[in-house]
Image (cartoon, rainbow, N blue to C red; front, side):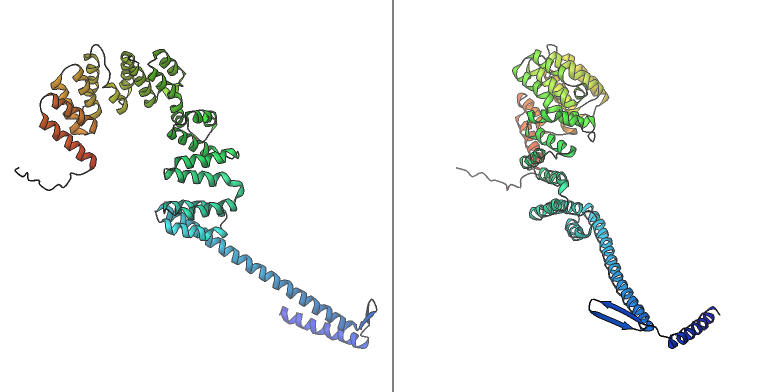
Length: 402
């Protein structure tokens, strides 16, 4: 009904307009420079309408192309996100080749291309494709020049995984020289200095390690333990008890609780022939918790009364009768107390629970002194076979008569 009314109104209006226009079509003149354009009003109106229609069509065409481009871009971004997620899952699942292909294919349209290239570099490194790894790292650097630290720290981590410690340290030193070394880089540099024995360089990193909020205090203490205990070892080699105790006093309280710190202090005291102080230190630590390294060291204690440390070791042994290290330490202490039968029993029990080359050699030496050479050689052969992982398949040798 409404449409009929509008149609009728348009026809009536159009008829009236045509009636007036036909009586007087009007006159339009447009002068541009020396040119003069003349026409009637109806024609001019039609020209304006035509120009509007053409302009509107052009605008709509451009808008359609722009919308189409946006749709294509959105589709590419969506596909890139899907490929990135699948690539990350493949990397976690050990499908490194697929992960590398998906991540690099998605990188140009990804939200953060540098991330894709960095993860792809890890996948390539796991595939031993160092050339592709370096290429992806270079592209990550190009995609995010401001994130240079992420690229070089990633490279240092991969170099450390390959055992290229000196190269990894050089990479981090390059980053430090530019002032871009982040907290992760500081941690890696400290670990490298620790492994390479660069105490002075590690000592210089100590303030930055302690100011790094991302690292737990226990981890920082562990990293700095080498520097803090280096003076202990040096004083022990000089057999200077006063210097040993002074160096221990300078060790932070948190570091003193580490078993490696206690072992370093005790070993230095033993080198300086202060076995009584070393025994007390080890005894107090082992009363709190039995530690394998400290237990082994306790077996090397030499006192005037050898029964004292043996009684203490046997006291711990009653609480932990299956501790192979404690059994071996008790055997050493029993040997010093000249309790041969007890020492042999402890060694046999230790080897039965956890055979080690050191304890096997000690047992073989004891058997040699007891004139049991055949048994000693059998123990040594068994120990070597365990170390190699198998016995040799040697053909039976027949001795020829001369």
